[in-house]
Length: 115
Length: 111
Image 1 (cartoon, chains in turn red, blue):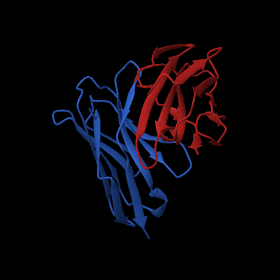
Image 2 (spheres, rainbow over the protein chains, first blue to last red; image 1 turned 90 degrees about the horizontal axis):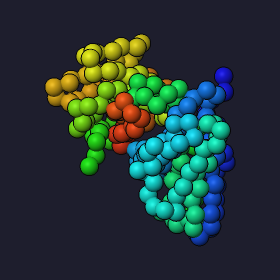
Image 3 (cartoon, helix red, strand yellow; image 1 turned 30 degrees about the vertical axis):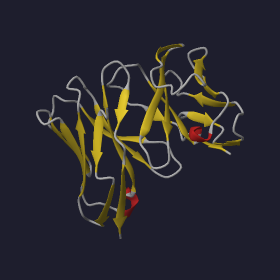
Image 4 (cartoon, each protein chain N blue to C red; image 1 turned 45 degrees about the horizontal axis):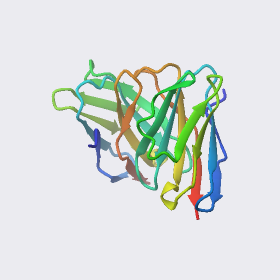
């Protein structure tokens, strides 16, 4: 069956430009998560959605980062005025419900490179 | 503060050997402890998970051992195979949605 889909798979852009990353969760999954993974590092939590609302935005590193989710499905993560330190793999995950006992299913990520 | 500490950072094991990866956590309210396997260029995939009311869970060659009093849990891979070479992440979660991940262990299984 279809898994979590992320696009683009790779993005190269110049410092100062805005970027939009897209996540299509598994159909029926109400919870959606964004993480950032820097080279050789663990997963850094960014934001969590339950339906269309974002009860936990605590991981967003600065006000240049924002995310939205429409129709309880697709989510976009936007980074404004990108900086070189934003270079990383951005991973999206979804789960059936926002409880700790539901496994998260990850997409393959968007590899973002800021020149 | 690192909520979940993982060791070792890297591990090299001979084919057929046992791979052991350890994690320690801080928050006694965590109630779900999954392990993820990640291959290069792919997202993490759930491998096995445990709840704190059991001390061990086994699925095939993969076993989680859980020590609630020590706030530690570990992944054991029996009869390690070259195809197991990947990065492994432990995680811990509160009912309530946020997952805390370890920093990962790069496992290499030598044929």
